[in-house]
Figure 1 (tube, rainbow, N blue to C red):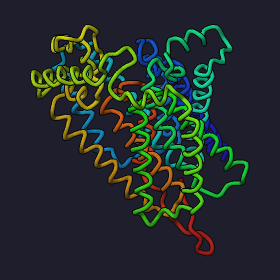
Figure 2: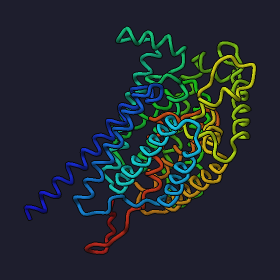
Figure 3: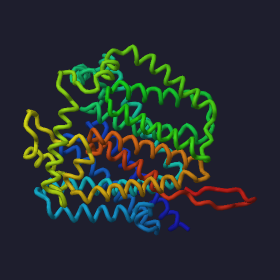
Figure 4: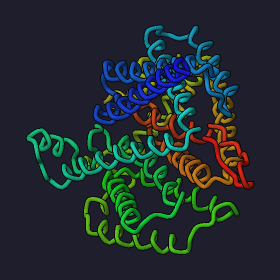
Length: 434
């Protein structure tokens, strides 16, 4: 008995250490510009994720469980991993490709830790609550700078640097919007899990309103469209599924929040200006034309290397050879994740990516029929966030940002994790194992 308790305690300690590294990884990623621009930031984030995965394996080894928790996407991820490793032999820069493969492996490791979390009811709520708290801190930090409330001299510099676009800790407002659209839609699933007291409901509504207002003030048109797209997906799914009995007060509440936000937003000249100038940038350049130029060059790169691509992570090294004349600045990303991934990994990546997305949503829709409200609503909120980031990826590169890629991995795990099993105890009451 003593040995059993000792094993269980050690297992639990390792489990909490694994979670701790994962929480630190999320916190570090959003306070360091998404861990995007500097190599050391990416390396530290990857190290934290690998450490989390190591302690996760250790805890399962001690408990006698299989090392890797099963998911509904195991075969698809195995095929993707083999494909990425296979085309890496044809890359033009081994060092750059190695870094990209390590980033991909860190996402897979994080995915399986998230799978284990998604199968435990309490831990699932904890990590979503942690993401919500991080997002709210991020929102208030960004709002204070945006409104000119400088607690430190460096904040004034950030205010000048952001040029009226709310970016918070991110260098680019589109990346801030990418994080927000996923976190916001994931958070909406918590509203309908159970009935809450009036103070808690008021706090949750206020939290959602702050997220939406911050998203608007990022002035990211791609973020606006993506958030609306994810919201519409959730709404349509609720309408056509008989498993979602949305209370009548919810549409009224949502309409009230939207009305109040619109009244506030319409008073902001910067938002109105941004909405009316869907093509022109503040400096007079044509953003749509510049991105069209980038996409044309990327298509030429794909034509030149159709089957194996230029290698994962090599886009910025090879693109200058294909950049059309007329653009003076150098671009390191395609501003379209689908084109960039195809350019780096070849046209065979297209059917593979479609297979992955279709398989993920197929499993997600199956889970929407689960009797557990928590399973249904968190799965639906995660699917809405995935839809949002997939829409945003048409005109930006949020999946190239490590923090946003990590949050995307969390959402995918919530969808891909097996639904809790039903069993009966006592007088025939149903219980759910998480």
